[in-house]
Amino acid sequence: MGLNLIVLVKQVPDTQNITGNAMKEDGTVNRSALPAIFNPEDLHALEAALTIRESVPDSRVHVLTMGPPSAVQVLKDSLYRGADFVALISDRRFAAADTLATSYALKCAIEKIGAYDIVLCGRQAIDGDTAQVGPQTAEKLGINQITCVSEIVELDADKRTITARRSIEGGFEKVRSALPVLLTITDESYPPRPPSAIKMMTYKNATTEMSSGDFDETYLTSGAELKAENTITLWDINAINADPDSCGLPGSPTKVKNIDMVVLKSEEIRMIENTEEAIGGMVHELVADHTLG
Amino acid sequence: MAAKNSVMVFVQQDDGKVAEVSIELISKARELANRVKSKVTAVLVGSGIRKAAESLIPYGVDHLYTVDHKGLAHYTPVPYTRVLTDVIKKYAPQIVLYGATTTGRDIAPRIASALRVGLTADCTDLQIGDYQSKGQTYQNVLYQIRPAFGGNIIATIVSPERKPQMATVREGVMKMSDPDPSFKGEVIEEKVELKPEDFPSEIVERVKQEKLVNLKGAQIIVSGGIGVGSKETFQLIHQLAHALGGEVGASRAAVDAGYVSKDHQVGQTGTTVRPRLYIACGISGSVQHRAGMDESARIIAINTDPEAPIFQIANYGIVGDLKEVIPRFIKAFRAKA
Image (cartoon, each protein chain N blue to C red):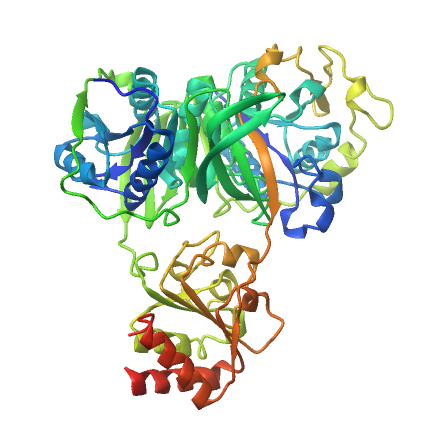
């Protein structure tokens, strides 16, 4: 029997390309000022799921993302790489969600899919580096987790057990778990396959039933779903039966109090000439105040 | 006597050995508790941990709760989450702190999810202050301070409305206080009942190498960056570290270039250090690198580029070639010491 695999992915601003206007005045991220990319470790999670599907016949790879309508790009990218089903969870009422509110919405969406065996996601997203959403989602689903997985060592679909190697400080451990389980995947293995050219041709214009041309979240209505597979399903807050009080801002206990740009502290610096005398003088000072020696 | 509203620390142990970060956090918890006039509590979960528990009291723990069970010798998420969640519900602390280790970052989000409270990851500072929102003032709120966005910003996060306020804290950033043998605290044993189904994980193999590089404990660190230029020239870094009795550090770029192993990496994705003296050689000083070393008491920067950002946080700057500067440094030190 095949396995139902669910991959949680995120579209993130590329934090390697920060510019001055990356933050809005209210302290939130100005995503429009940064290029948006597929969170790197989530691509490894998708690859791990596609690898499992190759070894366990009749398995299906579902990809879920929560985000604004523009996040549809990571779903298209997932289709290009071979996902069977993709869904965008999008609603104004999800906006400003912290990791707790995000994990709640993802849990509702996973339960909407129904039966699942393995939930996979990247270890962490490069915009927040929190590594919290995976474990928070696992707890809400009431299932076990293996975090920081570098390799799936063994998967027995009949006995419903999985053994994974996870990185820990100064080494690794191999952990065996019963299914269902949530795995967070690092970038140590499962290098993402490139998008398939044929699939790109098939899906480049993939869109949603509710939209004509550019779609916007205002197009979303309750229960908006696509009948056809391999195109993009849209779920809003009602479609996944989520409680609005647990979503978005009301469902987020953490608040950003303030944001400071990193400013270099300007202590007085003493420039030392590159000569034996000057360096000798500096060493003498450091020995005298017990910094050295 | 139950101490509600305490500042609580999750003590991480493995085979009865307590993680250093947990003692750092107890030291910080003592400071925070004094500030908000409450007690310090700690939770130690494991098997055969009585001795380890008693050793923690002198760092300033008022009440130390232990959960001793043979199935809990090593960390696994499901039973540990159950145990911790029960203890937190019972004693209702106002703050709970975890080390931002693999274990801390595995368990803290599960607990936050179970309790539906806020959690801030990987904090580098914690403070107490007021928070105003919608005309309401919350007093003695935990400011959870962390770098975000690849280290380009520092965010202060609060979670004023729900208790406990929780954070994971990066290793090495809080100072460990000296133990006070006369400190009076109490070890309290908690009972748990765990069923086989509480243990869905089994650790089948575990390989741990003791770190050969002790950057965290080093008083003097000589670090090399990509500006060193080659693995051969990196020998100069080793020579200076050896001469000064220090440890060898490196920037991520130097590690990626293969000059030295990852164990030596200082910075946001490596080790956070606060030595007495940090000597940065051929390191430009990216935000990520500075985040791991800017608490050093003294910094010497050696670089051929006078515009390198590292000079802006250095106490001493030398513009020059390492091949000249380092031999002069070693010669001068041998002459003085």
